[in-house]
Length: 171
Image (tube, rainbow, N blue to C red; front, side, top):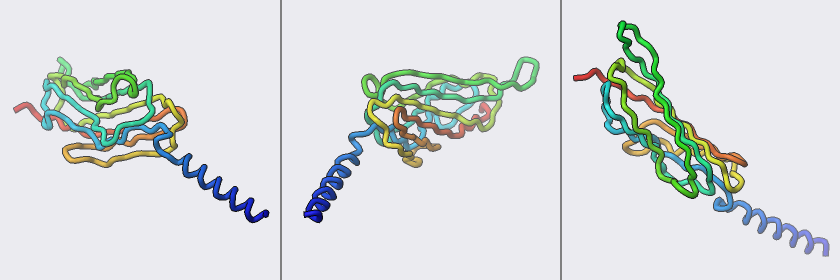
């Protein structure tokens, strides 16, 4: 009888474990395949549009904040070089209002010094179910640059990524 009881308990435990590992029961952030930038070649004064491209949408996410940052060197009227931070932040509700690819549109200052600059992306979501405690990285997809890694925690999820923008000399 003991063996039958242990067998029954073992089968029940396996059944419960199988049910508890269903990914659809957990919150997880989007998996990204990198950044798409338009135009691909930029000059001082250009309008630039950057998109963080989702490979797979997130699941059970609520309040969301996306932040973008890039610091460029600019020539001052006296000829000296100074740093200028370009920054934006947007809040939305991923699961209720907007699960589209996050974007940032901005103008490079006319006096931007040509060179290589790093653009940073950060995202943070409130989970509406427990997170599954994993990291996600879709690599770099076709037509994309850089990488974005997403992380799922119990109460929130986050993502961050970077890529290089080369600002050329005006023709």
